[in-house]
Length: 122
Length: 272
Image (cartoon, rainbow over all chains, first blue to last red):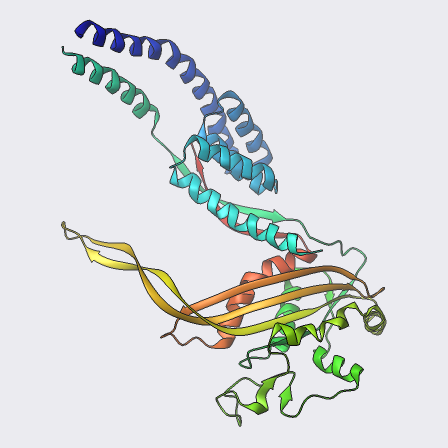
């Protein structure tokens, strides 16, 4: 019993030891892209910011913050379908993140109203 | 070390890794969301807000108020020249075309209840001719009359014509509402919690259809139906005109977006 427990614990740590650095590398590279994207977005360079966030989600598709920021970037550029997909990916990765949820709710408020009205128009 | 201790060490290690990387930084950033214009107005230099088929409550005159508000918004928020003209009552226009005058005691432009010299309660003398959607249907054929709109267009040098319907009606509902409630917790700090309660609500609904007509041909270019409601606790007294402007505030961005690219300002949270 005791041997089995040690075996399980060792296995967990071994997997972490092998997989975690690889994951951490990808996350670290993606994080650099996210940071740079934020710094250019703060200067109003949204197209450039979007390129960095696209690169971030390519490197680490599970990075919720990168998808969130990409959603904001697409929204700012008027690419609403892409924005919706990006926000949904962010929420898929972190369903309980209130920042992402709030951004998505605000986006939906505009997007749904726009679609409702356009759908009604001729 | 027992089995459970060993497992706890492993779980703690995982937690440490996650915890170390889980420090979230966030930045609030202003955004301006661009919404492209819904119709191409490059061929027009002028816009005419002609008048509306209006009805519902007699508390305000939706035709005059809507025309006045749209003109002022168009003057400041897009490039076409806004034509100054009297606001036309389309109800009177339709009745004139049919050769029928207004019914005795009925009016197309109700004076607000409580206006000087008028009874403060709605009376027969102040009844709008259009009270329901069914009444409205009887007048709507004017929008399909291309010759009529072409003639209007010729009179005003071929502008883009804005017309449509505006129904402003009183409404009441009962339902669950939420409100913040203040309380003091065990440490003496004032906090708020959301409480839900049943309440009687009253207010107004705005059902509009904005129709954009090419003044050169009389053809409809675009129509935009709108429905908005504002409800307040029945104990609260909200003037009809305030409620009307509150409802129009919700509608205006989309209306203006028909003619010109609009930007919706807001904020979003960027996360690291």
